Length: 443
Image 1 (cartoon, one colour):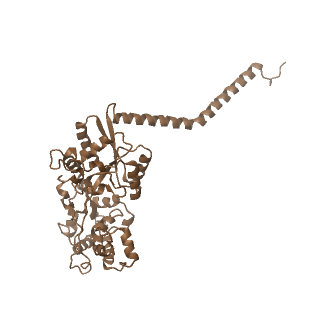
Image 2 (cartoon, rainbow, N blue to C red):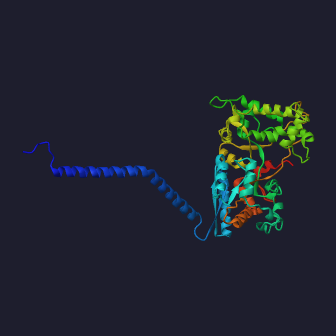
C-alpha cells in the first residue's frame, strides 16, 4: 500500500512546470518594470517629434516659406494686428506664411537665451526685454544680422508716397537712433512703434469724488485732489486710492515728474556735454564734491517722491504691473501712470463701465514755494522708436525676413499696424489714433 502523503510522479512534474512558468512571468514582469520608464520616455519623445513635425508641416506646407516672429506682446490687439499685416503680406507673397510665437514677459529673457543658444530661435525676434543690456549686446553681436548696409537704401514699400526714394533711416521719426548699437557700431533692429508715458484717469470716478470733470494740470492742485479722493470710501467701506502704483509704475513717475527737478545738475555733471548725465558722470561729480545729497535739486526730488508716493496704495513697492492695473480697472483707484502700450487695453477694460481720460504729469509752477527755484521748464522727451525687431543668424530666409520687416515699416502698413494695436506709428507721416494726441512728445 502506498503512503497517503506521497505525490504521484505526474503531479510533481505539473507543479514544477507551473513554478517555471511563474518564474518566467515574474522575470518578464521584472524586466518590464525596469524598462518601463525608458519605454515611456522613448514613446513621449517619438510623440513629441511627430507633433512638432505635424505642426511645422501645417505651418509651412511643401513649397512655402514659414517665417516665425517671436515677441512678448500678449495683448490681443498686437497679435491681431500682426496677423492682419501678415495676411496682407501673404497676398503679395503667396509662398510666405508668418507664424507668431507670443511669449510671456516673465520668461521672455530665458526663452530668448535658450532659443538663441540652441539654434532654434525664430527668424525675427523682438529685442530688449528680460536680460541685462550687456547680455543683449553680446547676443546682438553673436546671434543677429546687422542691418547697417540697408539703412541708407530706400524702403521699396514707400513707393508712391512722399517717402519714396528716402533712405530707410530717414523715414523714421527718430532717425533710427534707437536701432543703433554704439558698442557694435551697427544698426541691429527696425522699430515699428513709438511710445510715450502719461497719466490715465477714471473721469467718472474723479467727478463723483471731487466734482471735477477734468484732472488738474498743476502739481499743488493735483495733490489736493489726491487728498480729497482718499477721504471717500467705496460701498464696502474701503478708502479709495488716489494713484494705483507698483514697482513697475514708479520709474515712470521718476522720469516724468521727479527727475525734471534735477535739470540744474547737468551744468555740473554733464562732462562730455551730450545733454545727458550718465551713471559714470554722476559718480564722478559726487566723488569730487561737485554735488552731494544736500544739493537743492536732489533734496527737492526726494521730497516730491515722498509726497506723490504717499498717495499710492500701501505696499506698492512689492506689487506688479497687473495688480495696479487691477485696482484701476475695478474702480478703486482714480489715477494710473502708464504708456501708449496700455492705452487700448485700458480702454477695453473700461468700455461700458467708465470713461478714461489722459493727462500730462502735473509739474509745479515757477512760483511754487518749495519747487519753484529748481523747476527750469517742462520735461524734454527724447522720442525713440520701440517695438524693435531683429533678424537672427539662424534664419533660413533672412532676405524674406528683412522684406517682411520693411513691409511693416512702410508708411501705409505701419499706420495700419499701429491703428489696430492703438500705438503711435514710428514712421514719418503715418497718422495716429486721436486719443494718442496727448502722447505727443515734449520737444
